[in-house]
Amino acid sequence: MKISLFAAALTCLVAVGTTQSPKGNHYPHERSSHCKRIHQRKEWRQLDNGEINRYVNAVRKLNEGPRPTKYDNFVKLHLDGADAAHTHPVFFPFHRQFLRAFEVELQAIDPSVTLPYWDWSIDSRRPSDSPVWSTFGHNGVPDTHCVSDGVFAQWTVLNEMNGTRLHCLNRDWNDNTFLGPIFPPEYLEQTARDTDDYAVWWNTIERAPHGIVHAFIGGDMFDMASPNDPIFWLHHAFLDKLWFEWQSKNSATRWAYNGTNLDGTQARLNDTLPQYPNVRVRDVMLLNNPQLCYRYSDSSMVQGTGIATSVPVPSNATAPGPRRAPPSRRDDTASLTQDLPSAAVDQADKATDTNGRPIFAIGGANYRQHWDILYHNFTDRQQMPSNLASRSLQVPSPIPKEYLERMNYDLPSVRKMEADAATLIHAYNDLYAQVTNNYNCPSGASKPYISKTPLQAWY
Ligand SMILES: *[C@@H]1O[C@H](CO)[C@@H](O)[C@H](O)[C@H]1NC(C)=O
Ligand SMILES: *[C@@H]1O[C@H](CO)[C@@H](O)[C@H](O)[C@H]1NC(C)=O
Ligand SMILES: *[C@@H]1O[C@H](CO)[C@@H](O)[C@H](O)[C@H]1NC(C)=O
Ligand SMILES: *[C@@H]1O[C@H](CO)[C@@H](O)[C@H](O)[C@H]1NC(C)=O
Ligand SMILES: *[C@@H]1O[C@H](CO)[C@@H](O)[C@H](O)[C@H]1NC(C)=O
Ligand SMILES: [Cu+2]
Image (cartoon, rainbow, N blue to C red; front, side):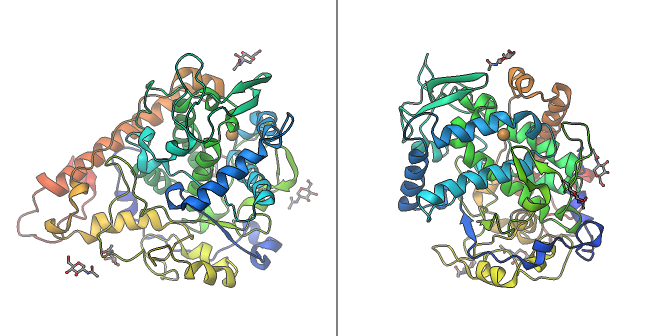
């Protein structure tokens, strides 16, 4: 990844080509799908108390009655599909389908429920400070590691990595009383900017940002029985959102899918999903497919914890640019939006949050906004919000070797990703320091305050 940090985006004069499905054929459902309703999945902090209660009640209800419960069966399905669905390209498609199947079960109990996601990147400095834990419970207690607070206290689960044994929901946080730093938004955005190659992007996200959350929470989250922990669904919904945003980046990433399957064959959109023989990868590529029909809220304005929040937006800022903006330096939303059924898009466009701000479900807004703010908006030192000046990102600790071995993640490549991430994080911290305190404008130039010279030139 080197320090080509911003060069990629600066030179991103990518023209959006005509949007084409693979081999020029449209999959029949791509243009003709009609979702009766598009459910919005919101960031945990965007739920009101009623939504929180309804979600929690539905999840608890799934785990009631004689064992195995419906909830247990989801965990079992994940275990049975584990080898094919992890360390292989179908990681993202499988989990998209798996989450949707879970959401359908919740909606059978309460049709108003949608899966929330946890944008842990905005809590990345100290994820244990996230408000999700006040509902989901904190760390397990000493010795037994049983979760004993929150709405899942005394919750029991059945499946384990190697069989069944009824046990309490377990957590074993990596720093005993708290969760150490994980990957910040800047890292996720850079990872998305870096590549249009599915195999590269999927591998990076699965091994490090996905893995570290499982490994640091520990207990049931530490292995393939991880759906035992109800936080699993929120973690994976966020990963699914990251995939959606990456797919929305341009016309090349939209249908990008490749790598090598468990059986050694080349991954194809025509492959069926592990555990879901009637569903093919291509069926879950677009969120407006009839069996999916959901979208994600924009979490870029959600306030995170600590100071590693999203890059703050000036108080009178409006939401990111127009939906049908012509493709520009950073093509992102256009290609996907054009092919969504227009009724659904129109409906999505009209959606606003409780403050009347538009909710952008169509991807890419996050990092475009971040980029605009850093490079174009703060032409004046006084405009820089004070919390950006003090933004200091933390380098995550290495993911424990035991977890990587259990997941069959290649140790050297994960260590390399971690080293790259550390380099990136230091570079960002330097950038924030330069633009806020130490950076002197080149002589004679007062504006733009932030030079458009690639960061590379400053080293
Ligand atoms: C499951 O069984 C395998 C092989 O029998 C063993 O290597 C592994 O440590 C076990 N995993 C757990 C979590 O007990
Ligand atoms: C995936 O596709 C990209 C872009 O077409 C290609 O460069 C890369 O080699 C492929 N990777 C694998 C693992 O097949
Ligand atoms: C997809 O796979 C099925 C068999 O599972 C096959 O009949 C069909 O021809 C394949 N379609 C394409 C486009 O390869
Ligand atoms: C926007 O910010 C400017 C400059 O700080 C201020 O004068 C103006 O009142 C703000 N507008 C709104 C709508 O808050
Ligand atoms: C940031 O700058 C862009 C481009 O110059 C502009 O369109 C946008 O409205 C600005 N955003 C904010 C939050 O001020
Ligand atoms: Cu999984």
